[in-house]
Length: 191
Ligand code: SF4
Image 1 (cartoon, rainbow, N blue to C red):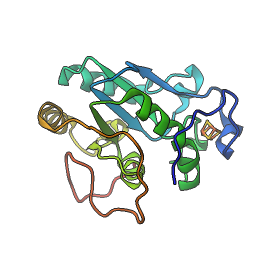
Image 2 (cartoon, rainbow, N blue to C red):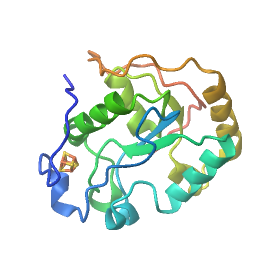
Image 3 (cartoon, rainbow, N blue to C red):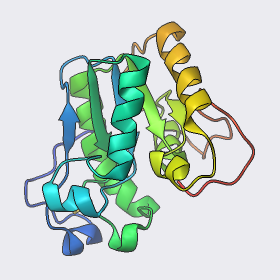
Image 4 (cartoon, helix red, strand yellow):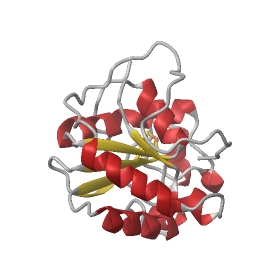
C-alpha cells in the first residue's frame, strides 16, 4: 500500500539515483492549486536545471495552461530522478518514488489532477486517484495528434468537472480497466 512520505534530499531509494544530476520536485502553486499536472519523470533539461517541465514539452505545457486560462497550478512527476535514455520509470521505481507524489497531493490538495500520458494515468488510477487525462506533450510534439482540440476539451472539463474532495491514496487491487477522464482514443501511445 502506498504511504505518503517525504523523500530525503539525497534520496537513493531506487536505482534512478545513479544517473541523476538533480532531484526534480515540482514547480508552481503548492497550496490548493486549481490543477496538478503529473508527468512520469524528468528529462535531460529538467535533470540539468532541477525543475520539472522546462524543456520543449514544458514549453508546450505552459502554452496549454495559458490557453486554458489556468493560473493556479502545480507541475510534478511520479519519479523525481531522470531514467536512463528517458525510458518510462519501471513499476518498482514508480511505486517507490510515488510515495513522495502522494505526499505532495495530500499537502497541496489540488482541485483537479491531470495525468500527462498513460504512464502517469495508470499510476494515479492504480493508487485510487481520479485524474483527468491528456496525452503527454511529447506525444503531440512528435506529430501523432493535434493538441488544440484535446486542450480545448480538457479546458472544458476543468471548468465543469466536480472538484476532488479526497486526496488520500487508496489501494486498488488490480490495474483498473477504466481510464481517467479526458480525450479518448484507441490508438497506442508510448507515454
Ligand atoms: S526516483 Fe525517487 S525514489 Fe528513486 S532515487 Fe530518485 S527521489 Fe529517490
